[in-house]
Image 1 (cartoon, rainbow, N blue to C red):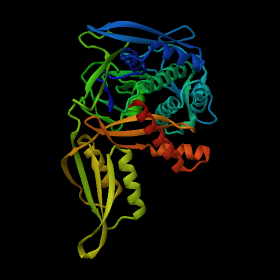
Image 2: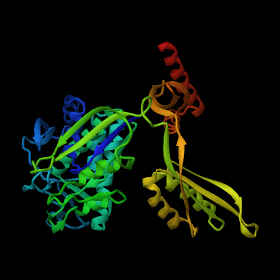
Image 3: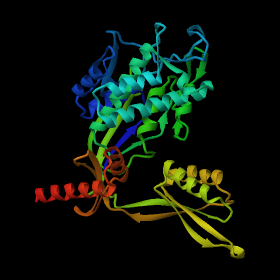
Image 4: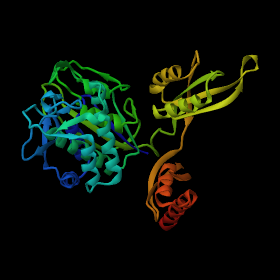
Length: 430
């Protein structure tokens, strides 16, 4: 399995993430073509820089030939004019400095239209929209308004679109199976917004980082920007210490400031788990709760929520409880780092008064994803192997289901063709 690890010891911003991607091997030409495909009057300036002795890649977004642009988000209530807009102007340790900007705005719907019309892959489009959706939802909650009323300032929207769409395109190009992030160093001090001065992290950043492990090393700079927070929360499946892997590539993306005694960079490490790596055995946490008074509809909802929040699996079994009452045993398997969060979810969503917890060792087969081209479209296929020998393979259900609905063909036909194409490709390789 191919893993990418984000070391956010100096936070993360959109431009730092792009710099790390290029430094790790994503062709700069791919980003330049992506920016041109957006057709929004932007260009990239890519250079090599030094941050406290670390060689890194710095990427600046040029809008109408100028850099040092603001990251501004505006919102307005219905019936109000632009002079009543509220905005956030950030001058973080690695972001753009604040400058005056014209009274032009782009709503989330317009931004989605620009992305959908661009000559960018469908997967990257979906990821870009998901990141923008997270950013807009955070701003909407802060301002107690609807997401449709959130407006990105024209230059800020261009800057953010470049960062976010290029981030999605670059992430897709690396063909990563799982993104993992370290805890995030958010920095310290204060940041000036249109509403006034706020402590770091800024309101939108705090909202986006709900559920993520954060800390401050004491530096008086804003180290995590809202765009950076939206990217890492959308991409990363978990926050953990450095995972076991066989390292292949390392990339450093530079922030704008060169901070004395502190390398202002984002480190991206890419590697494989599999042969030669102790990844066949791991520790997982088992959470259990007995339930005899929970609505069955709620039980299904709880299992869905557990999986959404990071459970490796969640299932139920019928049990006979005290006084011969029929009940259900809820079991969730998760990584140890997610156990506390999922325990709180079980308490909040069910009627249980206690959750049992234990750590167990499990052996897992090596897994990787392969994209199979069927006559109706691409299908991801999960391949499991042991000591280099394939033992199991299965097409991704959601891909097959989507294709079956779009092309009005039987689901079983899509699954069968994906398997046959895979088997045919393996025979050709022999």
